[in-house]
Image (tube, rainbow, N blue to C red; front, side, top):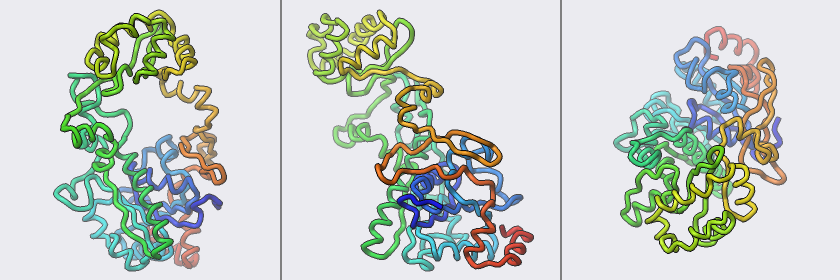
Amino acid sequence: MSNGPLSRFKVIDLTRVRSGPTCVRQLADWGADVIQIEAPEGMEGSDGGFGGARHGPDFQNLHRNKRSLTLDLKSPEGIEILKKLVADADVVVENFRPDVKKRLGIDYEALSALNPRLVYGSISGFGQDGPYAKRPGFDQIAQGMGGLMSITGLPGQGPVRVGIPVADLTAGIFCAMGILIALLEREESGKGQWVQSSLLEAQISMLDFQAARWLVSNEVPKQAGNDHPTGIPTGVFKTSDGLMNLAATGKAIFTRFCEATGAQHILDNPDYATGPLRSTNRVALNREIGEVLATKTTAEWIKLLNDAGVPSGPINSIDEVFADEQVQHLGIAKPVKHPTAGDMRIVGQPVRLSRTPSQIRTAARDKGEDSAAILKELGYDEARIASFRERHVI
């Protein structure tokens, strides 16, 4: 059992793919009692949509800290069991299409009628209503529609997807934040509510200053490649043995960079005297910076520049990320033991609380591993549970 800060909350997880499980993972890692609902073996949808092979990296990373209950939600008895769970739950999270949950009778209106304190979290591709509500959602579709692909990649390259499912991940995180807000509000009102996020809204929100450039200044951002679109000089530069990132934007840091590298000629050049001038003349400035940085190794420059207070760093492959001494110090790679897959490491939470930290309590469970125990908690006896199993209700 968990003793984490969310341990008093019971969460019913009806989600699949990535955005929903990402949302629920935030709650599970902080101690919520999460019951993951999956289709019984042999049913349509029972073998996919949850992150690849069950003992593989994606599934284990997404679904740790949950209990697993198999349930046929197309059967009356399966719905009956779900509603018993909901009656005593604090949170339900789902990412069905709007028409699917209504057809199953597990939409917000139906379940909140059983439990008015229920916080019901929904993640969709494009929103719960509107002209695109019934469209299937997928991360790359949202990246394109939400503008991200138009500003990613080298100038003139054409649209480029980001290397992570950023719309899925952020929609899940935003939904988890909304659920926590609703639980806090419930302490005042005593009532639950419907929390909604979508891949499209999350992606647009993550545009941040790029969206504001259009909304406030009517400026349509373009691809800038490895150069920061507004903070110059910031980008990728060659060194004598590889590549590095440099962020020497702003007068103070730009001055420190020039002084630390001995590039007084760059500092004295009137073409680079102000931020707007450095932006206008970025191509020439980057070329001159590149000539300076090509004279030492990446490691030499990173030490020298960071000692001088100039942000810089290597461009790591994923294995190099986890070999980095600071990453190892932070301990974000968390150990977990799976009964059959053995010892593994998964990605922990990037947020720390001084008294009540997140916990990786269990690896992702085998399908239906906790079905009998959960049904006993609901008052079903051994004979009834055996009957459910025989008829593939669970």
